[in-house]
Amino acid sequence: QSVLTQPPSVSGAPGQRVTISCTGSSSNIGAGYDVHWYQQLPGTAPKLLILGNNNRPSGVPDRFSGSKSGTSASLAITGLQAEDEADYYCQSYGSSRYVFGTGTMVTVL
Amino acid sequence: EVQLVESGGGLVQPGGSLRLSCIASGFTFSSYEMNWVRQAPGKGLEWLSYISSTGSAIDYADSVKGRFTISRDNANNSLYLQMNSLRAEDAALYYCARDPRQYCTHGLCYRGFFDYWGQGTLVTVSS
Image (cartoon, rainbow over all chains, first blue to last red; front, side, top):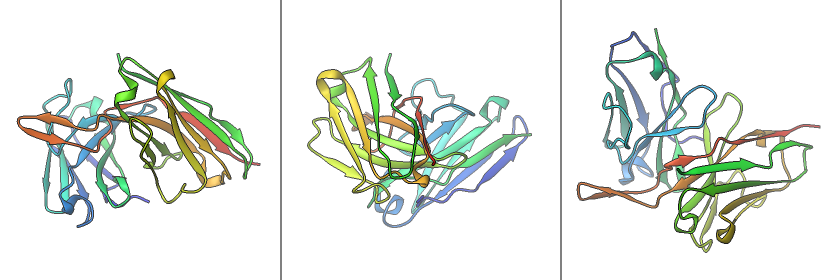
């Protein structure tokens, strides 16, 4: 049921930069709706990571950043750390109200 | 501290019913829109249902429309999901999640996201 497409997995060595893409359509991201990102550590509930395309809630390290352009968005993690190993989901809004991405597993090598 | 605590999950036979609850604390529950989101084992997140702060507006994903009913009791800081005609594909961890309606910073406001989630309650559908 996901209408936002993400790569299944990305990996990087500690200290490296990784990016996760989130591809939507003209009915969601392309319609001007904001993109939000969540981090889900193993065995835990999702946690809001980025809101409104590129805003970090209080307590989220500045190595996480987001961007949006056209019908896509991306999440960047710079200075990758072992504790960043998790699943990441993008989320936007569309004709079916809230829509999630397919999810990306980030592995720290 | 904002807390959302789900309960009511369990094992149910196909075609059966369950009622999930989410008890909120640490914020003015009646001021917030609420949602249910589920995650099947090893799968991604799926939004299921929305209810406005007063309960006057409700919405469902097509996958549960006509089978699930969302409701809330603001006097008791509670959110509910009545699930009927359950199917094997409804087996999942069910989360309640708060939508703050909007967040404004630097002159811009953003909407349509979930700022707090519960820990989830597990629903298993099997004969």
